[in-house]
Image (cartoon, rainbow, N blue to C red):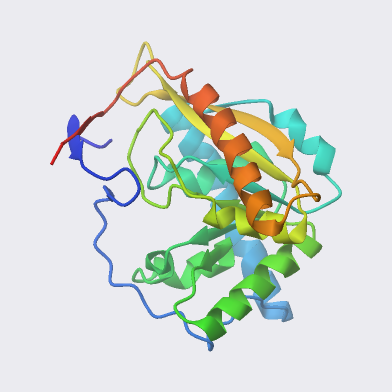
Length: 258
């Protein structure tokens, strides 16, 4: 449990409140996003299905008593790849919850390079589906090709558009439309999931109820830039509406005016 009761912030878009201190590795053109060898496929299956999935289920159910509302909506896109966008409020829970709400899909999460730079665990996270953001143009080309490949293979690409972790935050921060360029370009469907917090009768950790909305489809009649803004606005509105369901504030966030 995060023991901080009050957090003061200035910038909703850029303030970061994760307590992890990691020096990220450089993601350049030599970083390999897609592995198709039999060995790599096995390590993905082992770490993702045999190890991580049971741990994820135990963690979110035992710690947060997590419940999903609206998960049946995923059936509408069961034969194609899609994107999922969620609010970024848990250091450990955020990598786990997507795997619970649309099981048994293969989820690949766009992450900061910190996530593959950790001692020991950083060697495993790529097998768990981590797609680190690139640091240069050549790497960015490979990164986009990997996203295209996963959507073609009917996988799910998970995005946290708020980018920075605000533990237990009960509202939705005004994220930009940048990350919606992926589905806008690929004409792929989009879902959003909103983790809300609720007081439990017993236990210090709140209960998490995850609301699923969608699918939202890109408007093909709009230019790509307008298409991504339209997608962002519809997702943002849905998430803001769901966030109002939270009835417990584990940590209070107070804005400091300059």
